[in-house]
Amino acid sequence: MKYTEQELKALVNKVIEAVKDEKNPEGDIPVGISNRHIHLTREHVEILFGKGYQLTKIKDLSQPGQYACKEQLTIVGPSMRAIEGVRVLGPERKASQVEISRTDSYVLKLKPPVRESGDIGGSAPITIIGPKGIVTLKEGCIIANRHIHMSEEEGKAFGVVDNEYVDVELSGERRSLFYDVQIRVHKDFRLEMHIDTDDANAAGVGNGFKAKLLKR
Image 1 (cartoon, rainbow, N blue to C red):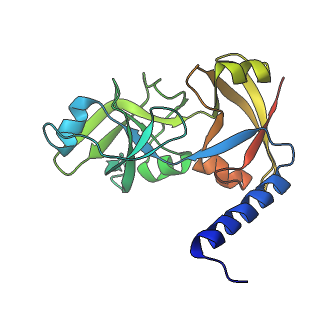
Image 2 (image 1 turned 45 degrees about the vertical axis):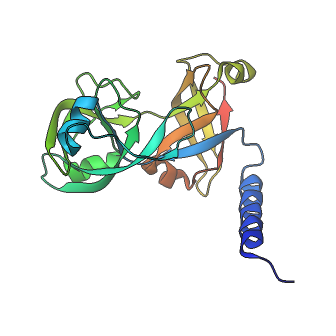
């Protein structure tokens, strides 16, 4: 039997989803893997890319209003070793922020704290290099904490509230239990657990795998 290219893609995706379900029979929460990325203020966008520059959206992310941009930048720490191709995420923010993994911090020779996104007070300094200019943040580099986005209805269904901390089981190639995962509830959020690439590799999971919330 011959399949069209579109039919083959649909069949492959069906098989992938079936394997995921088989590996995660009791999974409740979809997992999203967060790679290193940058959030910028309007001021810093113009320093890095030029006056009046507007970021170019290439795709929406899982959380409403958040999106990946075409623009990529270089980050440098005290080691003077650069990490290139770091994606900018939109929309613009009130404070610029760089989120990296612990592995990245070894390359950059930084000691960023593990924080909730946006909590950058007293965090690590870092330099961002763009095509038109350079920005050095005195604070702003963090390792994002493990967290789960939920709508208000989903929070009620799971029996949790905003800023509560829970334990989460991931049944990947290396079954893992993550402690102190922050719950973030907002009417506009969509259900998804966010972990970084280090955590994903440790547990052997990828985007689309499922996590099981364990109430304490």
